[in-house]
Length: 215
Image 1 (spheres, helix red, strand yellow):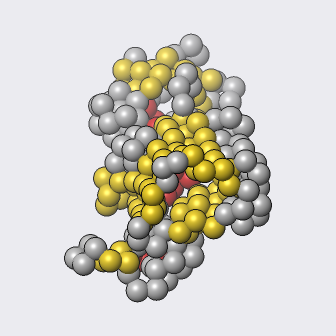
Image 2 (spheres, rainbow, N blue to C red):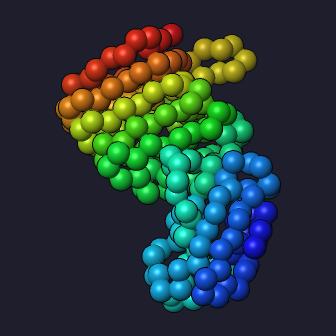
């Protein structure tokens, strides 16, 4: 069967052997689509992306995403429109990641208001995307990426601190942290990451793959 949103998938009444083609998370073609199968015995918690519980809330029975590609934050509802707070969606993607997983971020501007904890040796491929702190966190020291594992790679994108868009200058008191490795985990690689407007790096045991640009 074919459905055009995650809400439509939740509304189905599945039976043993059912398969579903999801064309988009909110709308067809928005990057959040994929193939699902019905696992009638599963009691796994709903994570809004790879495990989906129907609206009928059965004790057992879940839609399971067929994962044949890198984990994509769009699977969990991240919009990357520069306006929506995508923290919850990206956090769900990070939580699903296990050793060696790649979290693929489609191009866009992803606003996050709390930090993302990397607990396993994963690769974060921003794929040209921007991680942006909102003005509300200007006086805090949250970390876009808090490294809590050895062998983490973060590459190919931008991390921007809070700033005044009218003057293109950092907001007063801005001190968000782009990448925080204060726990001294080894083999952190930062490759082609652009930091600007207060999004500093705090690091130990860091391998640089140039260019990494700062302003």
